[in-house]
View 1 (cartoon, one colour):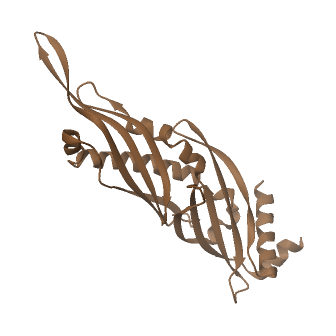
View 2 (cartoon, helix red, strand yellow; view 1 turned 90 degrees about the horizontal axis):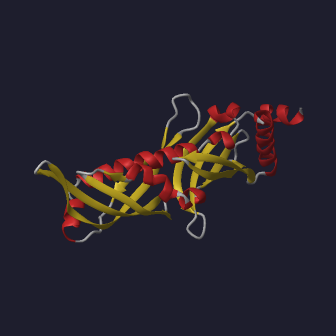
View 3 (tube, one colour; view 1 turned 120 degrees about the vertical axis):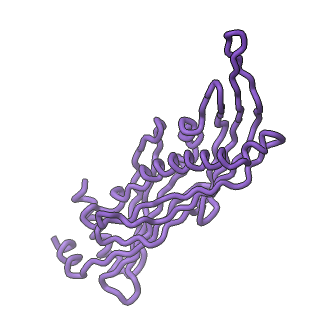
Length: 249
């Protein structure tokens, strides 16, 4: 599979160089497991010769994250849900992720309760102090991080929690800071794990060529009808004589 992908990729570069236009990279669909959920990720893109350069090409990669969107609630629940008898009880109702170019807009709907426990006459008594539903908006922004092994850069996510919507004493509690900070860390950790498994450049870039691919831009895009796409843009340089040698074999 690796040799066939390498040969096809080089052949595609050769055709793009000769035709002087964009050439699609065939979409490849792979299943990944994230927090016990089976998710299908499709990666594709295109290559094109840069104007005035025989050995330099632009590469665009597109990662379709729509199946991740559909399964996001179940993916985030293990990280967010908690049930402390004498503390916080959190239940994630729904997580919706939509494009908001160049970022993603995540809306988390949850039920929150805080309980206290006291002992009276040798018995533990549980008492609910506050509870209710809340809506937490989170802005997710991708960025590139250089790879230590010289391969294509990896995608790192930052999460920014917006204004939490909740009524009364629950709203005051959730706005106190500690809850929002903890939720941001959990969401970042879960979403980063999902992105790490979803952005496997091996699906589109042969390992033998990864050291010469230099990604310089990444962003979330709207693929239509709210479908979330992770778009990466970069360049690669490969000598024309190497292209001719491979194509001629």
